[in-house]
Image 1 (cartoon, rainbow, N blue to C red):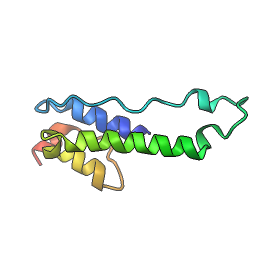
Image 2: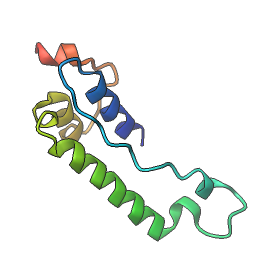
Image 3: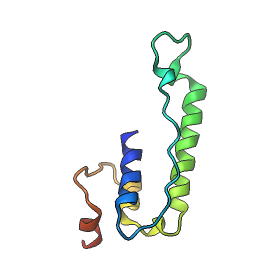
Length: 94
């Protein structure tokens, strides 16, 4: 989920963008406990709920009129490899 946090940070740190980013779906800390009697984070229902939550998050972000113009968002959605040394100002002037 590190990539989701990166796109949130990129959008928030972009100086010309004023987009209120919705919160990411909550983390599943309790599902990772070893003494649980179920499949924890590998439970099919949990995976589907998490997937839907992440999909709703990215749809809200990508659907915002200001975010739609952000090149960093397009890079996140389209590029297979994320450049971790990326800074918004370098992208804007490229």
